[in-house]
Amino acid sequence: MTLPAAAMQKTALHERHRRLGAKMTEFHGWDMPLYYTSILEEHKAVREALGLFDVSHMGQVLVTGPDATATLNELVVSDIAHVGVGRACYTLMLNEQGGILDDLIVYRTGEDGYLVIVNCGNRASDLAWLTAHRRGQTVINDISSGRSILAVQGPRACRLLEQLLDARVTSLGRFDVAPMRTMGPDACIARTGYTGSDGFELFVPDQHAQRLWDLILSSGQPVGARPVGLGARDTLRVEAGLRLYGTDMDAATNPFEVGLDWTVAMSKPSFIGREALLAQKAQPLARKFVGFELAQGPVPREGMELTSQDRRVGTVTSGTFSPTLGKPLGLGYVEPACAALGTTLVLTVRAQRYPATVVRLPFWKGDAKPAALASPAASTLERPS
Amino acid sequence: MQIPSELCYTKTHEWARRDGQEIVVGITAHAQEELRDVVFVELPKAGKPVKQAEPAAVIESVKAAFDIYAPVSGAISRVNDAVVKSPQLVNQDCYGGGWLFAITPGNAEELTALMSAEEYAKQLQAQPH
Image (cartoon, rainbow over all chains, first blue to last red; front, top):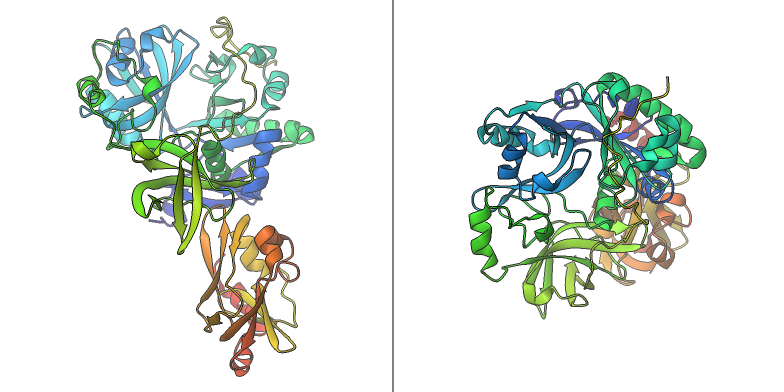
């Protein structure tokens, strides 16, 4: 369904995208940049230099109060009690049947304070679910409107933000988060992203978004910084083997079949969906999420069939042409017997058969990522005035 | 937007050029701009019969696959293997090295029914972009 442009939601940077000549696209009711010049060029900029994304369509929810940790621990599969202040955690929220309601990043910004980033398509349902299951004095507050998220991704990101924001940006390890108090009480910076490259995400009030956008693009220009749209965001995340909610998983998917077992802390005595997962764990998997590559050929697309000896054994959920590896890549579900690395399946496109080989995820291994450093994250990152 | 005056055009953004007994076919600058990152081209086999305004080839960009329609009926006489090896040629040189295939026309009259450069330019202006 395509909405008329006037009916779509706009981020605080919408005018910037227009002025940069972006090709816009509708994404879950938002008018977002698909690309500015070329998906392939923007992809390359992130892998080799720096890409700046406006991802303000993502939902931002604050979970606060003395029972915030208990609330989240009941709602997500990971053990939030093990996430220290200044740390973040990729996790899943399940229904009672063990189906995935959303994938989230939970940032612990204080002893009793969390910033939860939710997929924009799930914002309303996540908020209702969080609110319905809050414990004690927990406050659930959707702060999305009036706030922006800038993702600064690529090997040049750290150096640039170190110069523009604060020297301590460098000391942030992967999945660390630190407040940026000069930009508002809930503003923060985290070493997270959805590209597989090193990078940061800035969570700021709208009034800082345009200035930061301009500053990063102009200061980053000498090192090859460019704005990047949702088109390259998708090619980057596929290369990195990162699942997309609504495409690679949904409420009918359990964490095991999508290969996100590592997020689940079965050791926790209780969380929503735990009983169902225990039962599922005792059963063999019905299907398994895999990555596959074609030596050459067309782009695997959502819904295409994977076959083996002329029998359907799986379905493609995501696919792209990998600009970094120079070949078509796909993600999808196959029968467990066909999921072993090196298995050759067949992707049929317009009556032509192409061999598709199951390979290890991620397709693209990434830059050397900085290890999480000893907790520098509680420190405040201040902008030099 | 480049629209060479010597070519004929279809409503679906292919160009056609008479070259001896053949009609050479490609996509217009407007079409390649819209497609943007072309990453795969699937061409018909030489000898394959094609019908005017029916799909004859496929171009895939990162985002989607697009049918390319035959501007005239006839049989495929030659295809451009270079664009199969280097699909980005379609973006880089759509009126030259990025040509797609050539047709031996069954009815040369069909060519005269296509749009002139001027008419095609008018069509583009009329489109809401």
